[in-house]
Amino acid sequence: MPEKFVVATYSDPDSLLRAVRKLREHSFRIYDVYAPYPIHDLEHAMGLRRTRLPLVTLVAGASALLTAICFQFYAAVLDWPLNVGGKPDNSSLAFVPICFEATVLIGGLSTFVALLFRARLFPGKKERLPALGLTNDKFALVLRKRAGDFDEAKATKLIQATGAEDTREFEGKL
Image 1 (cartoon, rainbow, N blue to C red):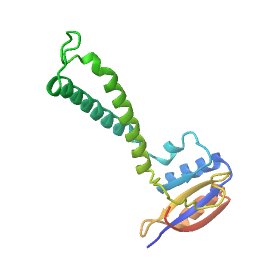
Image 2: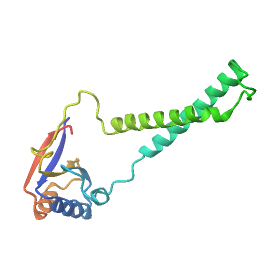
Image 3: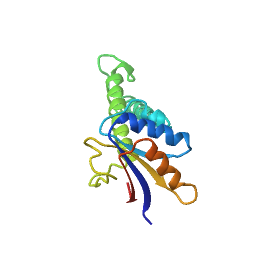
């Protein structure tokens, strides 16, 4: 069963921001907002929580660091010990460049993959915009119509009061 949405389009970011605040004030949950450029304080007005992507970077980077240290120690001390200039087998200063590079590489790549996964940006995915011109000069606010807890008349009245250019229904997957 396809989902149903109410889509309101605006011509400027200030009216969009006012609409988001007004709808949140009346306990409506904003499904998504489309804008051709970033709008300051929009994520706060929408009530979005802070992203957890830095946690992914931290965990992946720490895992890469630990793996690099363990592998180098195993290779230099246990598996193939070499006497190079009288240095000890576990010369940890020699491990620093590899550990740093592995931490940065794996941390960055895992963050990139996590972002693509979280944003559902898979190769070959077709874009589905709920209104024309959203990536050019229009701004849109999208509300999901859920059975039982969505008052469509109240939402439409609030959207019209905030100065929306157009309000329409969208059925499908965003």
